[in-house]
Length: 256
Image 1 (tube, rainbow, N blue to C red):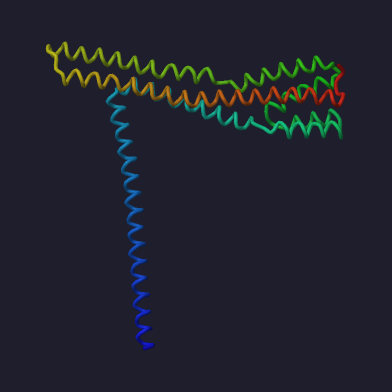
Image 2: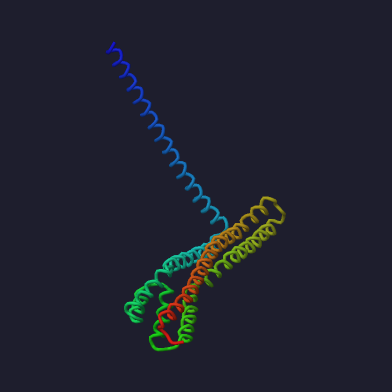
């Protein structure tokens, strides 16, 4: 009886092992098929883009592509710069208050000098004016003026992004118009209207328009994000500047 139970247990283990192996093989095959399918889809998309690029005319399509590359480069640069410019203004104000209480205005200036970001630069200008003995109105005007300078630095490059947003569809339209002219020239040379020739010429001409519009849409999305980020930073700078002036009044750093 014990031998029978042992034999039954051995058969069960072998069956379970076989099932697990089969399941593992099936899973591996499914993953392999999924990877192959994804690779094939990417290859097909790349091939389609190449065909449309050539079909639309390499000359005008190259200009549209250059507009996309330059526009995206500017957008990425601005996004990185704006993320680096973001800082915790509440913590900075708290550190400045501690510096004013312990080491005076010179220690607070040193703190701002060693802190990166537009807000720290604005605070440094205000503290520098206050250390020169200027009154509170002069300090406040200095903070506002330097805040405008920092806002201009944040907005640097935006006109170029706007240029590429406007330029991409115009280049596409220009390519379409020239393509339509070539299509009608072909019809005129043939001496008859062929539906296939007309449809093919119009289709080829419209590819540049579609490409230009797609580029403009992509850049517009990035542009709107950058503008919203800049607005958020400027609002934070204004709020922090008001709190900074209140801090100077609290510690009697500058005369009214």
